[in-house]
Image 1: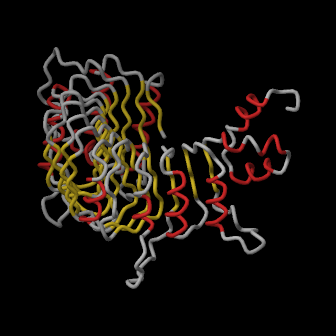
Image 2 (image 1 turned 135 degrees about the vertical axis):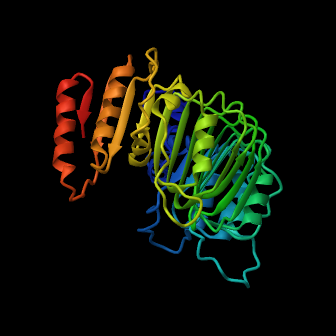
Length: 419
């Protein structure tokens, strides 16, 4: 290092980001200390100040280090900080800062007499951000943000939100292309109008009865968890769609044209059958279909799936390459009438991989007929995985069914495997 020109030393040290490493390098030599202003990224781990000795406050140390950097572009702070400290050191780096990630830890802020700016308010100082990621957020009141005209990516992980506060925050981010709200609670109704949004992942805790309305003509990837009513009309570009509800029931889905959709994943304990049938109808061009819905039924009573004709199903999804199907849907495809009227020219042209989860030995004959039909008509089938999951039935046919599956695997050992 001593033989290198100053410019090369500065270039090498500019790739340091851990605050502890930066502080140590400042003590090596004056030459290394003089390279500190050229650092572009600064990271404060959770334990940065655990062994702090002396009167200095962590907020002051963070601000001092930020002030020593000429053009800080990325700042990640996981260590604890105060609202006033955040406002102070963000104002120092506001003009150059492009990427900001903060562990807020303010979920317990309930002091009504607190008159200063909240942590969420303070974030608004960094107006030139391109990406913002926040952990542990309390946002029950609209943050005092003017606008983030350059912000493309917003991620909030682990949050307590109110509808109006979330709506107000998103209005200040009109040019988002990526939005992630993960592990969020308190949300009841979400209406998003983001014209440039391409990737959206929403994960809401609670009763599973949230409603979502999304208007984003460029949306390509959408993942939704915890909503019972979903409306997305502009879907010409939608390529990957995942809908799940682990706590409640999916009642209503409204989507536009899904001709571009290639991957569809639907999961949950209960879906209304109308919602399932609509999704299957709209997703006629899908290439990868994952279905893990346990029950249907329009009310509280959990009901099994109605019969689904296997021939009609695959004729309606001619481009399907991978089909991952859980017990309920597989059982619906295995009804007595499903294979009665098979045309001699029927084939499943594109199917290459099938993953089937079986949870019951009931209707074993129909299930074996369906497995054999997938092999027979799936001319390009390369892999079939049969998962025997939690089969606790004491029915006498359990052992017989398992033996039949093993025999089927042996006869088709180049394609079939059991897990």
